[in-house]
Image (cartoon, rainbow, N blue to C red; front, top):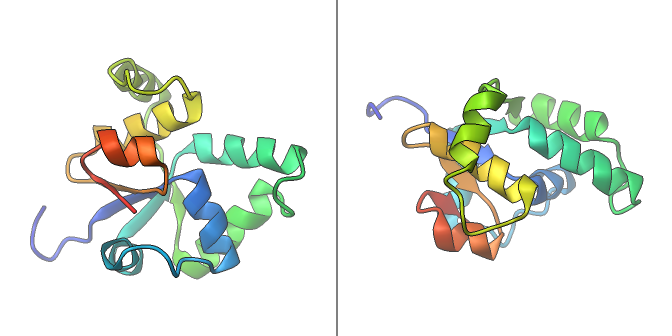
Length: 132
């Protein structure tokens, strides 16, 4: 990564919900700095997982409400990485059977030097560019 280039930063579903609620106070200084200075992306899988959470009434707002709010406030945007590429990379992820975690992590793995902000312990353990 060039010195003046912004870091590429992916956020998982849990972090998206926390960003929307303004609850980032227990993230590390590194994670906060990445959110403040990076180019922020979410995987389309995040939107699907948010949809399931909304259907089960685990979150109060629709995925579109959450993501449009975060686009306006944090410039969070959807990644346009090819799903075929993500699935191919996901086949190398053997440490989880959770399809959301697998695909979200695989997408971040495809981009050299990209970070993934998460609170998921498995992702933090197995993906070296995961930040909490």
